Image 1: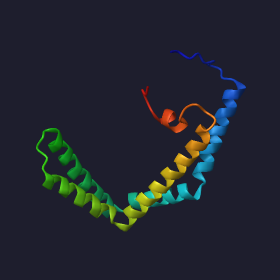
Image 2: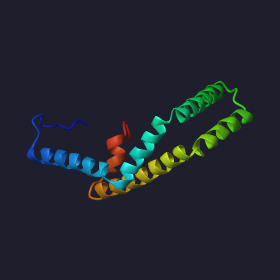
Image 3: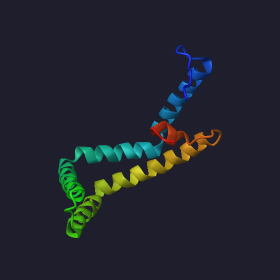
Length: 132
């Protein structure tokens, strides 16, 4: 199926684009988004925490490789889970994950509001690819 669009755009297209930009700006001003950004910056600025994240990612990559080759053990899984728990218990990481979760919930609420008059899930289709 091919959908023809006018390359020059219409007034309706431009109005929707302007509303979308305005929505993005308003989301960026939400306290939940600002809290997420602050928590993210705290995590990114903490070099010790960044090292722990890199170490966790290494453990996860090793586990995924072992799983793909059929060599992963329950002990490997436990090691990965322990490393993740330890990382998530760090105060800055815990704050970041909580802020991220709150933001995702708010974005889902906004997606439902935008999707209500549509016959598709706006966020799902806007962010998805190749879905039937």
